[in-house]
Each structure stands twice: as structure tokens, then as C-alpha cells.
Image (cartoon, rainbow, N blue to C red; front, side):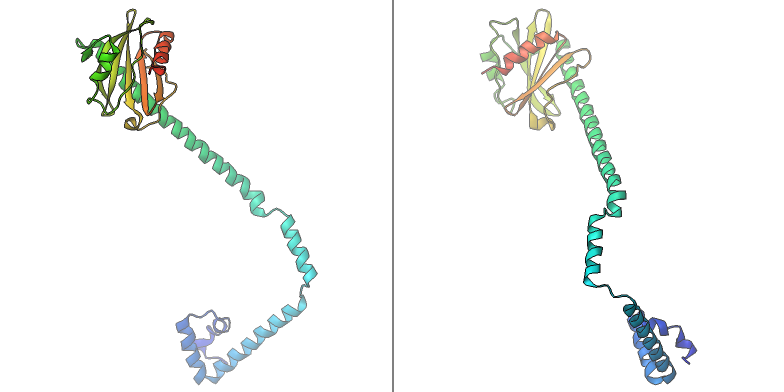
Length: 248
């Protein structure tokens, strides 16, 4: 009979589940304890007999293994039947949430930008000196900006249109310098802002909603983004935008 102090460790030793330190300690004990050694040998032999009997009870042949593999291959996995649809739905929800928050963030940025443009336009309307360079000649206004802003732009020819160039000044949006050109059509004043796209830190907006009862148009060209804002009707504003887009 095994020693009482070691009997609880016999099965763990036979199954190879002792820690390295305990296994070494138990091995040293077996060298000097014939009772524990005999009991360990008996349990090991019993374990081997059980394994041999279980192995002889059923040994699958190659044909059986082949049938099992084919059955598994043809049958949808539990993961595929249960979890795959749930994972797909989760992915769709994550994508939808990402798009939703991205659009909301973009709308918020657009509304903030519209508010800033409207404030600049109102400040120009209320100023006793709305422009720094006063001229109806585009060949006078455009060169005035040289050295004052880090880009150049084209001013449209207006002789055959209903628009009149009043002048221009340097304006700042997101702390970036740009041009503000002032035009008049009948009793309305239009501000056209021009900035570099990279300075705004956002993609140009092709379609913009009005701000503070103003109509707004936006487009981009050659790395510049243009904003036209006024209380004039949308048709007049569109005509001025088309003149800008065709300016050379």
C-alpha cells in the first residue's frame, strides 16, 4: 500500500500531470519506497490495459474515415449556421454607424463653415470700407493680391453681364488667408471667397444649404475652393459662378 503522504499524487504522477518540481520529488521518493513504487507500477499497467482494450473495441478503417470527412465537408458548420449571420449583421451595423457619425460630423463642419462665411459677408456689408482695393477692373484687382495671399486666381470678364466688380480684400477662414471679391448686381452685393483646399482641412462641398437667409454656392478648381454668398436669388448666383468657372 502506498504511503498516505504520497497516495494522492500517484494518479497525477501516472498521468504525467505533476509539476516538474513535484515530479522530481516524487521520483526520488519512489527510489526509496517499494510500496509506492509497486503501487505506481500497478496503476500504470492498469492504465495501459484500459487504453489497449479501448483501442481494440473499435478501430475505424480508411473507408470509414473517408465517409466522416465527406460528411463534415458537406455539412455547414455550427459556426456558419449560427454565428456567421450574426457577425455579418454586426459588421453591417458597425459600417452603418460609422457612415452615420461621419455624415453628422461632416454636416456639423459644413454648418460651422457656413456660419463663418455668413459672418464674414455680413461684416463686409456693414463696413464703411468694405474693400481694400476699389476697382471695377479685374486687371487691377487681381494683381493687388500678389504677395498678400499664397496663390493666384482668375477674375471673370463682366462687360456683357449684369454684374459689376466692386473690389476685393484679404479675408481669413480657419486662420488661413484668402481673397474676398465683392460684386454688385442691381441692389444686391455678392461675396466670393477663395481659399486653398488644404488650408481648410476638409473636402470641398459641391452643394451647400443656405445660412442666415443667404444663398451659398461652392465649387473647387485647381486646388482652390470657392464660396459665393449673397441674399440675391439663386439664379443670379449661379450665373456669377458660371462666369468664374469659365474665367481664364
